[in-house]
Amino acid sequence: MKTFNRMVLSLLIVSAIIMIIGYVQLNNSVLWGTEKASIYVREQMGGSMGTDQYHILLQSFIDQLKWSGSILLSLSGIVVIICIFSLLFKNSSRLS
Image 1 (cartoon, rainbow, N blue to C red):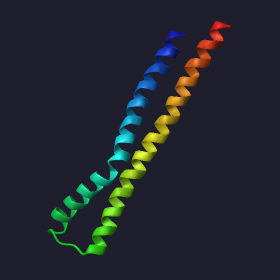
Image 2 (image 1 turned 90 degrees about the vertical axis):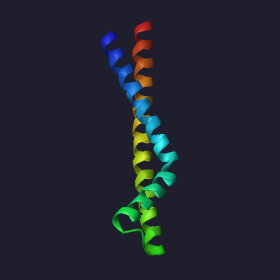
Image 3 (image 1 turned 135 degrees about the vertical axis):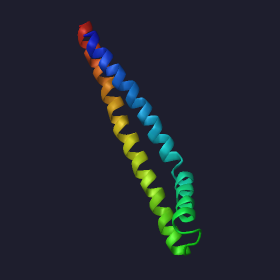
Image 4 (image 1 turned 90 degrees about the horizontal axis):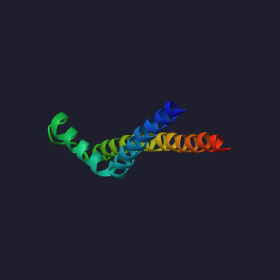
């Protein structure tokens, strides 16, 4: 029983950390996407690019960060909820 609780608790902690990382990534996606687009234009394109192309590039970098942050946040959030309920129901069945 203690092994199960330790396993679930460690999974809960790891999932909570991943959830925080996903939230931070989702929250900073515009800033980080702008930085990535600027670095790309400077290094790959020699510092010049058309405005329309830059906006497409910028939007794709921002969308990439939003999607990855959303996936991290939602999947780890689901795992956190499952861990909490498994700890609650596993321990409450022992009390009966």
